[in-house]
Each structure stands twice: as C-alpha cells, then as structure tokens.
Amino acid sequence: MPKTIHIIEPTLSNEAGHCFSFISALCRANTESFTLCLWTGRQARLLFAEKNIRIRPYFYRKIRRLQAYFLYRQLLATPDRIFISTAGRTDLLLLNWAARGVVPPKKTYLYFHWFKSDAKKIEQLKALALRQPNLEILGPTPSVVKAFADAGFKHTRVVPYPVLKREVPAPTEAGTFRHLLYAGAARRDKGFSQVVDLVACLQDQGLQIAVTLQTSSEHYGKYDPGTQADIQRLQGIHYPFLKISPETLGLQEYVALFEGAICLQLYDPADFSDRVSGVTLDAFAAGCPVVARSGTWIANMVLRFDAGVVVDDTSAPTVLSAVDNILHDYARYQMNSSMAGNLLQQENSADTLFGILAEDRPDAEAPLTSPSSKHPGTMS
Image (spheres, one colour):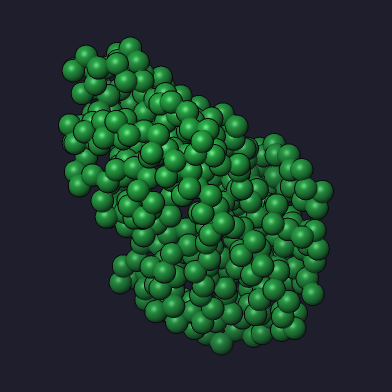
C-alpha cells in the first residue's frame, strides 16, 4: 500500500485564503499512517503542526503548467498517490500526456471545486474518459461531478468540501454587531461592485454603519478591469466608517473579521448556483449571519438555517433593507449562524476526503498500461 500522498496546489504560498484552509483540514485528518508531500508555490513559507508533512516549494506562476506536466510524469512512475486539490480541465490533459498510458486505479484523485461546461468541453471530457478511465473525480456538489459522470468517467463522487475545524461561538456568547463585511478576493462575480454601490448609498444617506472590505486580488496581484474600476470608485467615496483591507490576511486575522459581522455575499447565481463557498462556511463557523443572493448555494444554506436574509436583487436599497432586518434581530440570526457552523463542520469533515485518498485497494499498484489511442484534445 502507498505510504505517501502527493498534494498538488500551485497557488498555495502562505496561510491566507481557502487553499490553506482546505489543505490544513486535510492534513489534520491524516492518521499519520501517510506522509503528505505538498507541492506548492515556489515562495511558500508554511508551517504545519503535524510532523508527517513535507513542503516542496516548486511552482513558478508563469510556467506552472509546464512544471505540472513534468511533476505528474515523475509522480506517476512512483507507487505513491496523487491528489490535485484544486483541479481544472488542464490537469486532466496534462495527466493524460504525462502518463503515456492508462493511469492505474486508485492512483490519481482530482478535486474539482466547480466546473462550467459547454459542448466543446464535454466532447473533450468524453475523449479523456475513454483514454483515462481510472481517474478519480471528486467534487463538492452533485452538479460538479455530474458533468464528468455524464462524460463517461467511471469513478466520480460527491465529497464534502473539507472545513478546517474551529470552535464555533456558543449562542449564549453572542456578541454585538460590529460591521458589515465583504470577505475574500475582490471579484465582480462575487458581488464586489454591488457592495461598493452599498457603501455609496450609506454615504449618500448619512448613515453610520461600519463597513470592512477586503480588496485583495484572487491570485498573483491581478484584478479584472471591472474590479479595478470598482476599487477606484470606492476610493473616491470617502465614507468615514469604511475600513479597507487591501492585503491578503493571515488565517487568524481573516477569521477575526467575521466576529460581530454581517457578511455580504451577493454572488452571481450564474456562477454560484451549486458552487460551495468557503466564505459562507467561514462566516457560519464564526456565528456570522449572511446576506445572500437568491439562486445560489449560499442562499440555500442561509434559508436552510435561517442564518441571514436572501435578496432577489442586489440594488443598494434592497441590500440595505436586508441588513436592517438582520440588525433588528441580530442575536437570533447570530445564534442560527452558530448552529449552522457546528452542523456544517460535521457534514464537511475532512475525514471523508482523507478516507477516500487513503483507501486500500490491491489494484493500486498496477503498472501503467500501453496507450490505446492518440492523445485527445488540446489545452485552452
């Protein structure tokens, strides 16, 4: 049985963001029967309390795909297991090329956080499924894995998005409201523009509601043009009760943002209809109510636990009305959020994912077999 699991996460470089939370939860679930080898960004400076963790700072941003190909080629020739924790379609292509044959069963696992399909992608997936029938496709929701199952991948599973376990504030310890919060990377599909509209509305109405916004980029310091314009617009509003956090925060600083907050998650339903949000899980873990946009996974969680308010439109007056509703019954919403946090941490335990990666199957040691067809598809 393999004793090492190689975890591939090119964007992981520090304790900020959900990559670190995801990986940390997985590391804590290890029973120490495995060594976990983390292949991270080249500048990674990470510390884990667990003793059986090896850090391999490896990936440069501009050549990470080329590096991934050679890394997959190297690791496929070992008896170890491979886990790609934030997988994309390109990883399927690279694995196929690197394998030079059929990847054996229980060898390689890919966790797709989300997948936006179209006819061209589905045809490519079908070709890859024929070529690599043994790849293990994992995802947090049924709609994510369905695309791969429909394309012919034989090993697809819905696996809860692993949550880093934290102590959820008890309902009796509920605090007072401190601020409105936009947490995570500034992105238009996550409703950042509408949050800026809300700040402008607060300024125009002369209100005194504290607001804290993270304006860090998703990766590598890059913003889309629309978000850049929103940040410039925000800087021109001069709302005296606004605090802007432009840097990516460490884990403890990030977690502290949710204390006494109302989290604004006005995410686009076209992109987040069935896509798990780590920010939502973080908010509930801190007993923080959420304002969510209808038609999203986030809204479903808010309605399930009555842990906030769901809005049908994201105009500033509508969002402000939702905030007022929560403020008038903040203690109850905070209590419901705490209960949601406790239950979701149980449902999203990393033990499930680690148990899959650690499964003992005798066929896991099978050698690569000869290729039966030409490599399908091209990278895009």
